[in-house]
Length: 108
Image (cartoon, rainbow, N blue to C red; front, top):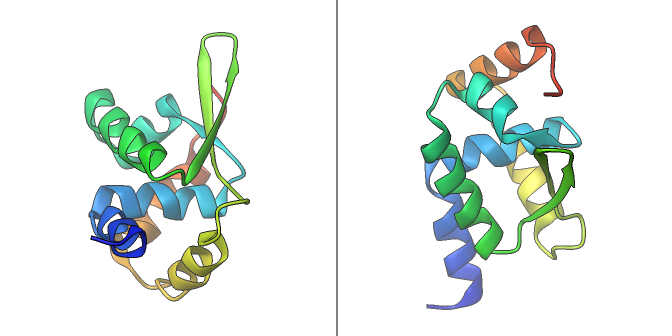
């Protein structure tokens, strides 16, 4: 399978798509924030973060005990992904994620 089709396969999973959507809205998020926003266990979030990392879509930075993730702006498909996700304006799960993110005091 080509690299391009693997990337789209990676993004076809709803949880990964929700993570990427949130990272389009916020400069960076840590796993603890993603757990609270997506209301999923740490193991699920970590597994999907790992998958996104394997496709080089994310950059990470460690601060104290926290690891923060951001979209890799250097990835050739980041702008395509951001444009694609902007068309999801009325998607219920993503709207709910954004609402929860705005209600939480972000930053661990």
